[in-house]
Amino acid sequence: VIAVLSGGVGAARLLRALRTATDAREVTAIVNVGDDLVMHGLTICPDLDTITYTLAGLNNEELGWGLAGETWRVMDELTAIGGEAWFRLGDRDLATHLYRSQRIGRGAAKSDVATEVARRLGVVERLLPVSDDELRTVLATPEGELSFQEYFVRRRHDVEVSAVRFVGADRARPAPGVLDAIRCARRIVIAPSNPLISIDPILAVPGVRDAVAARRDDVVAVSPIIGGRALKGPADRLLRELGHEASCVGVARHYLEIAGRIVIDEADAASAPAIERLGVRASVTTTVMGDAANDARLAKDVMA
Amino acid sequence: VIAVLSGGVGAARLLRALRTATDAREVTAIVNVGDDLVMHGLTICPDLDTITYTLAGLNNEELGWGLAGETWRVMDELTAIGGEAWFRLGDRDLATHLYRSQRIGRGAAKSDVATEVARRLGVVERLLPVSDDELRTVLATPEGELSFQEYFVRRRHDVEVSAVRFVGADRARPAPGVLDAIRCARRIVIAPSNPLISIDPILAVPGVRDAVAARRDDVVAVSPIIGGRALKGPADRLLRELGHEASCVGVARHYLEIAGRIVIDEADAASAPAIERLGVRASVTTTVMGDAANDARLAKDVMA
Image (cartoon, rainbow over all chains, first blue to last red; front, side, top):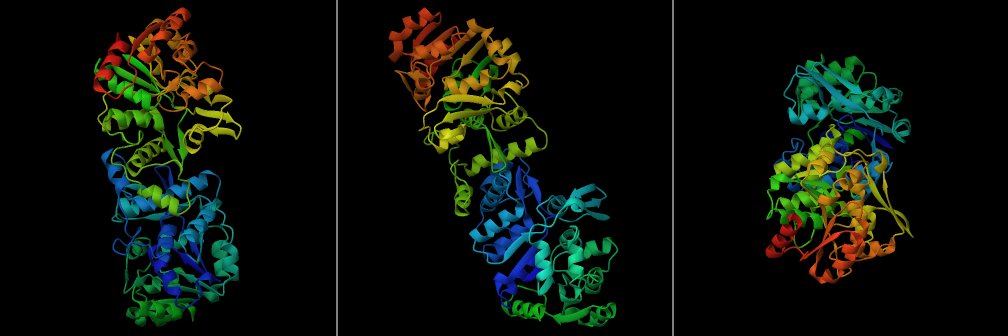
């Protein structure tokens, strides 16, 4: 087993890249659920769906989220009748949420549904929401507490964050298979996702951080920060606002107790010694994904 | 106030016809909720929506249900991923259900949402679900108990029914405005909807039957049975299966305690004396709607 702690887009790309270096059937993604929301009565799992769609080859490359060939009939009509449409749900995407909500309404667990949808779309990797229980990432801002999607989508992460908490995390149980995957993995990968709002909620589920820490020598993180900046999203700004260093060194320090190695970008090669001094091995490669050769190189280094 | 006890299609057509004989702002439809369902996490109110769409001029005349110019992107995709798609929800229609479910999730009542959607679509009549509480029509069949939509849509009402019950009716409260509308109406109309599964659930809400019965002289029912047959749906078959006479006389008898008059079709003119002998006045006119002249004639007779 290769266990990959996963947020959304960055993790989806890494998981896809890993196919060049390992058998996809061996890979288990342990996916953040702190971004999940109930909207219009529907249970929506944005990180999980991004990964599912990307691994199924159905992701919308232009938008960077959602499905290729998407249409917006329902949202257009919802706007017309005065509904809340800031969280855009495409027509094809909605089918996933209807399916999930129906199954959950009948007593299925989120992790069961994740498996069903992945299989139906031809995804070979095992996709596991870290927990079937409620766990909500909430951000403290000058405008009050915002849910993850209010912060990320509605406010386009253009608001100062003074604290992050994971509501429900203390009572959440790891989904079936999560701890076993971590314990038995020959490699554990922390995807280049936002450490504070994509990976930390995974680690906040009781038992997960300890299980990962116990495997520290086999844990490798891929830095989501290159040259002090996030390729996408607010990771750099959030790291600064929450008292961390917005650099690959800051990321290595954040994961100090759980990751024995970090993969950093060539642009950050000069930071390798500082990371090694923390007691973390540093591998230098290209961490920008999207190009087949780069993807293969990164995957090989992660699996090395 | 003109209060109209309403099921779906037949009621929608009668309400539209009534515009030729009275000010639409005066009309309050009191709508069956026994067909309502939660599916895919969405709260769906088929009778209410049929009325809303018809009065907004948005109904699909070919299908006989749903919206004109409808598309099926979500359902097609839901089918593709193995979801339950026997209850067809069009893309435009889904927007209504998303809107309603979001509002209800935030604490709004079904009746509030009915008003909001109606206003937004330009419907002038007041549309009131008979109750904001749960009330589910359940039919006993050789296949076991079926929900209304399982019976009506999934089994195309092609199954024997031995009993009907309205689960939750004893605890349901009339929605705000329902009893007042009945008490203050200068006319109460029972639409040509299925007496046993569209009108009876309305009357089953505690207080409603008594309020209607107290106004018996001002209550007029329009027979949904013409020449022993229902124009649409299983009303004739159900009447027989449940021990009633499948005729306008049977309908008059069913409503004996609450309706002082019944409007029957010319095809049933010969039944008028039998109805009068029950102590119910009978008006004879054309009850088949769809043609402007017929609609106006029926509306005039109902309002006479």
